[in-house]
Amino acid sequence: MAVTVKDVAKLAGVSAATVSRVINDDPRISEETKKRVMECIEQLNYKINNIARSLKTNKTYTIGFICPEIPNEFFMTIAKGIEDWLRKHGYNVIICNSNESIKGEEERIKLLCEKCVDGMIVIPVSNQGKHFNRLKELDIPVVLVDRLVENFTTDAVLIDNINGCYSAIEYLINHGKKRIGFIGGDLRLTSGSERYEGYKRALKDYCIPLEEKIIKFGDFHIQSGYELMKELMEIDDPPQNVFIANYFMHIGATKYLIENKEKLKYPVSITITAG
Image 1: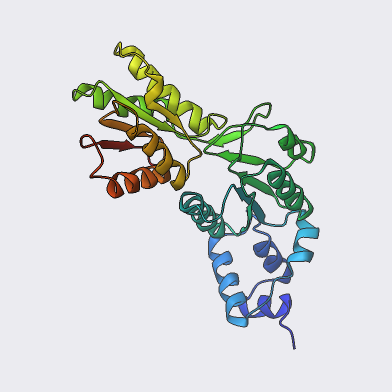
Image 2: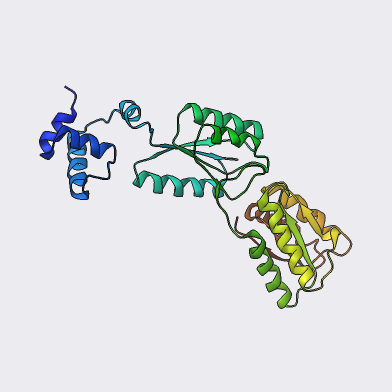
């Protein structure tokens, strides 16, 4: 026979209404009572009816997380942090992969809206934000991570790309490096354009001319880093110092240098950003 709310209430020594309030995270219930009721729920293996709960509270206690690619370690580290924090607060997470596609992102947003999530956390695939306005129309809160989009204003969790990259280039300059190559990411992404901006500002402030032939742009992936480092090393006078605006492109660039160390005209040092 299935365990009921009344069974939990009897074991906990409270009313059925109190058990219901604990399940629905009513702030009027003391922490001591919450703890006792939750222990009884676990002891009796009571199954909370989430459908009935959501109908009553108008909440599903579910948050959607959309990222450009699930295999990306950086994105999955963020996903783990989100899930760990939300689980402590009684929420579940639906993780979606937009496959680095605006269309895929639109489809995932539509799917999560249909699942009636209480909010979304999104790492955008581009700077286009028109399709995010659907969330405002439905009054679904959204937080952007790592990147911003155009024509859509919301809360966001970002790093200071410009000053971070500026500081790295400044450090190299202060240690005697005057000719610094740059391997950057997609300039349509704020993480790509801001890191490049930090690089340019540092050179300008130290009166070092921008040298187009030692500046390359890729897509933040390993193969891109490999190919762009190859291009840099094959020019007549390759730079001895290269700043790489992403960890994964750094892996590819380093792989190229290791595989072709006998061909290099001189040793090359690499400076990278973490994201």
